[in-house]
Amino acid sequence: MNKLNRDITLSELAEIVSGIESRLSKVESRLIPTGYNQPEEEEKDIIPVVQETEDEIEFRIGELWFAKIGIVAFLFSVFFLLILRIDNLPQGILIFAGYFIALTMILISYLKNEKLGNLANYLFGGGFILLYFSTLRLHFFGAEPLIESSVISTIALYIICICMIAASVLRESPYLTAMSFTLVVTSAIISDFAIIFFGSLLIVSILSVYLSNRYEWDGLLIYSIPLTLVAHLMWFLGNPILNGTINIILDYQLTALFIPLYVGINGFGRVKNFITELEEPGLIIKTILNSALTYMLFLFITLKLENGINSLFSFGIALLFISLAAFYWRKQNSRIITFIYSMVAYGALSTAIVLYFESPNYYFWLCWQSVVVVSTALWFRSKFIVVANFFIFFIIVVASFGSGNGYETASLNFGIVALISARVMNWQKDRLELESEKLRNSYLIIALLTIPYVLYNILPDYLVGISWIFLSLSYYIIGKILNIKKYRLMASATLFMSLIYIFIFGLTSGDTGYKIISFLLVSIALILISIVYSRVKAKEKQS
Image (cartoon, rainbow, N blue to C red; front, side):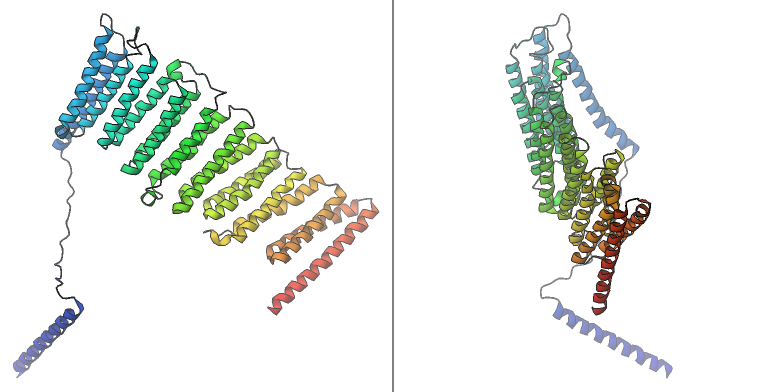
């Protein structure tokens, strides 16, 4: 009997399972479209980690690296053959040998490109370098040049550079292209003509940006920016490579005028790849090179110019950098790139102020610059700029008072700027992605301390306490208009300081009129403030 019940139970279970399967198949037929074949479970491809054996490493070093080093050593031997003088050997034979070897290497790189692999590029680049030096030997490095005219020699060098650039681009090799740009800059230095020199640097900058956009050659632009800057520095130092001596060009302002052109080409030219390059390390490096490094050279050159002109140059490039910051912010909201260009722009603007104004006047213009920085930082939504600007503003205030220049009427600007900066930050606090309450409080504390301190130093003793009372009333009025509690607290703190000062100075002063007026003003101020607090408290209860 038990066995029968167990058999019946198993058969019932089998019927239930088959019924569930049939229902599931009906549901799947309704849910899954007709003609859809359910894909089989794909097997994940497991890529084994292949480690090089000792034999493979040995063959790779022997096959590739030895050949590369051999080509480089061969190039050095031919260079010495072309540059150094060899007795009893005609110069024409050396130049002919250089051309023959160079053309042979270039021809082999084309004919054996498939078999040689990467070595073909080494042969190609080395062949063009030998071709360049052989042409250079026609006018230089010899006791009696075969070509007397330096113009003809320079034209021949540029023809070789143009051919190498075209061939390098066709090979899609950024390394060969960078090498060809180096030869172009070298030809520009050798030419020693301003138009050819600066024109060549501009062409290298334009081609670098164009090829970087088209072929994604980020490293090419990273290489070309320092290349043009070094060449520009060589020209400013009087072309010491060609002339053998350093002779700084003081009256030639083209050395400064062309640097903003490089900045504009390299900055505004990188438009195509904004989406892929956003905040990438390569773009950050290029930005630092195009801003901070470039401005260091620009400042080094412009400092040698006359006062007034150098400040105008710094102000102009500051506008260019801030334009680049706005450009990158509007295009892609790039925070890091915007921050870099902005900080360099603010540094250039500070330099222009220091160069134009004499001490201590530039302290007060620098503090008003803080308002401009805060305003633009709020537009860029950059918390980094806001924080950095506060510390810079604090350093300016400390430096001004520490140098003994903070005891003049103009020093009131520090407190006024601090109040304006705090107000601007509170007005646009929703644009910042940081808790700006502490920064606003810091600005207000600076205003609370600096304004009474300056009034104490610039006013007679009998007017200090009275001025503090009027300052306190001003804070109360501002707090009343803006309905901000912090200004009421500042007013109370200022009034408390004025009470202490008036009681100490009033009791010790021998002027009876001052005692009467000062204590009368204190009483009036206290009564007015008491009325203000009563009305504020009544409004709070009513609300």
